[in-house]
Image (cartoon, rainbow, N blue to C red; front, top):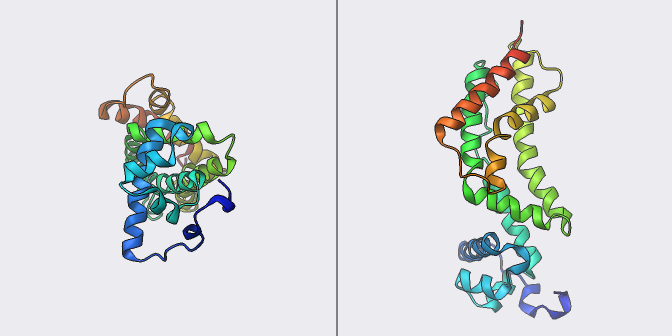
Length: 216
């Protein structure tokens, strides 16, 4: 949809009052349900308006087109990705304990069915809307890796670890945690893993990490 075909009201967006924010969240949640259930291409603005319980006119007051609305959904998913899970205390020298808690919490979060749905939807549209994939990665996985890398740097400076490339070490740890757990869920090969299975895999990842990077 081009600017020429948009209702005039979209050019004068409502200010972010409490009521407007609540309405926007209502629309975003309705759109999220439709996008995750049908994918980007099959979702229509009429379907989204119905799911959100608003008129199409109201929908266009807040979002100019389906692309802008999908971008808002991606931002919601990004903000929700592992929120708080990567808030590691740089003063905590118990690296094995911190990594275990991080790994278990992150994989438990990541393997929720709705998270796999969101990632499938983003991957499906990333070729045509590369900015969506870029935003999802930068504010999701890349942010988590950066936070873990900062913690590893602090522990290396404290003499607890001997890590030479913090970003690589952080990314490798996360991959070793979810490689055999999340990908089967992502491809609909298996249901979310049981907590016992998650703990088992994360414990192995932690042992391998500490064997490689514990200060001698």
